[in-house]
Length: 148
Image: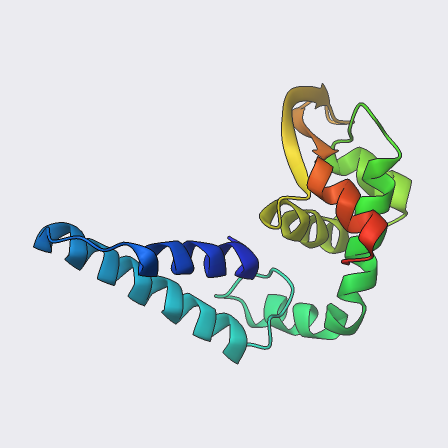
């Protein structure tokens, strides 16, 4: 879930008023979990997506962090040029990026609601089914508005 989405969910949960103690306790638990996740994201400097259990993955995320916004915009731009969408493999080729750089960008775009699984599948070079990703209306607005 993106930081923006977590903020929205948190605000909605805080706005709920109920006299049902069980529901109130559940809402308080959800609020605590979201606030803890937001603090965790803030404390790790909002690194690009990486495997939290892996020191090498964390180091790679830290190394690419200064360029991550530009790379993510490049991925969104490439996807926007293909009305039928792209698989990750096709997107990597179109953007001229390795998978370990491309996928975290696409995951960030998905978490932000800027790309979506179309429900379609295409074969990879290894003849395996792959998700076809497409830009959402919000993604096109982000490109136009320079949000990335």
